[in-house]
Image (tube, rainbow, N blue to C red):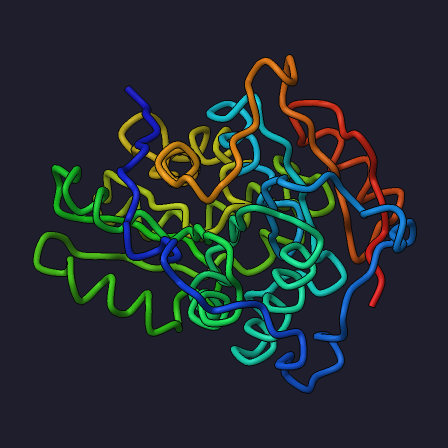
Length: 316
């Protein structure tokens, strides 16, 4: 039977709550994409979003898969989602660009009162979580491909990994494979073109299905019985993947594990203000995008499980 595995969270991806490092906005790397951000309706009198919200960001709309898990796990919380769609996909960007852009977005969220940052992007986690931890004085939770749980779960000894080019070339990913390579053989594939398709709202067109088939077939032929989704966009392709692979391929998605870790930090850390579940009958979410086109509005609304309190452009 087809299944989705939700692995336990890797504690190494959590920002230390005892850190005394404060955000220093003067340390932003010198690069055009890292200019300080602002929303069109923020002012000295009005913050762009409610304070004590949980900030979530991704290169585009893929991180909505993580926001979905966060909303289900933390129904009393407020969330601010930033889609850096203007610069998506991060998988095609340089390592320095990814780190600098992540710092610009994380800094904007922290400066405007976010109590926690969830880096809902495997590529940004791989290339930027270290600099985010060193510059921001709020808890940070990242995501990474579920290599360990897949290696433990496989019965055939073969695991497929679908991720962005930038994630696959990262030192963090190489370390994951080195630590768990004795348990399984990994068949890796960069998902060129998939992020762009999902950003358009295309998850099952003939072109996308053909592309997925070309990526999955070598894994299936190699007898892989687990598929690690190494990009937060890819859970939106789960139905398409299952239609190609059939039941034997278990999908490993870490979104639920990320949400559980965020929940753990909130309940265990006295420094993080806890929103009462009775304060809101359901999660409330605000949406910001560096490229708030009508298409982005439409796809973000379709992919989000609830209603957005507002959808606003984010300027540099």
